[in-house]
Image (cartoon, rainbow, N blue to C red; front, side, top):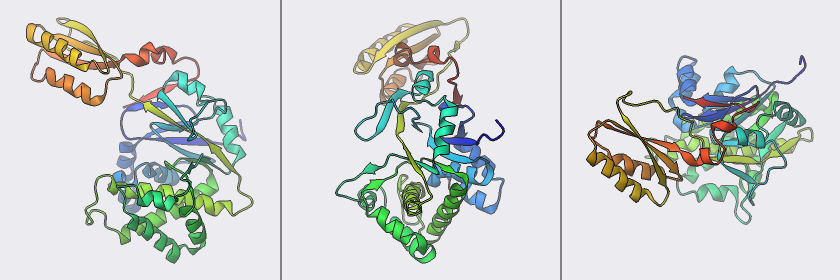
Length: 360
């Protein structure tokens, strides 16, 4: 329609995964954003060089600079907002699902583009339902994380005090309050999104001028500090906006998917002259599967294509099974998530308007 608002929710992905793809949801592969920004301005190149430090904020920066929408939203490869009020959540207002597939896409309202668009247009900002830290505070949570450094958050407070004093009262109110907005997820009206992004990336740029994380010997997780700081800055911005009477806030629950691995199409590894073996492997029974696999490896000289039909098997257990066939050029071992298929949540459920794209 001519007056229809353009609502875009960008899903940041750092590896091949299943993602919803329609007129609302746009999967964005991190490596593609990095390649694009490396050809851009000096600021683009600065961001690209620090992609792992900014985390999903890199997608936000790219969308701010190069995308066009009336409402901008953001999620992660395994975290979305739900758009179905009837869905049940846990005590923390979190919705958890094992798989991202056609069934869950429909159940969570992710394929109902008209409803999502209408929901976005009701509000200026849609945030996750905040976590409540009860007696403690958002500041305490950062300080107690075990992997982050409170000096970084203190530095951000100094920057706000010196460079953006209009945000200082909101910063104190939010950081010493009990409710925290997590995961850098939101949907925001264009004008506010541009205001927020200008401020957010200005603060973080000044942070880099004051703190050299590499020189301080930060761990891999601590090097992601700009992304963690972004979460707190979003809460500060929302607190700042809440003081304005003309801003309408909405809340949506966060959905977390435990398994977003893409479906795999299996073709013969060795061609026609091979034996195909399908081996059930269940969690807690990996040692038995290893024994059976070892028997096959020791007794066959033929080319053997083994597909393990897995049910709850962890990645470390898969590595143990791979070790059994190490050095055997005539044996291939691949893993198929049978539990997804058996639950009726796999390829057979991808029908109708619920489209799932598998990013490579």
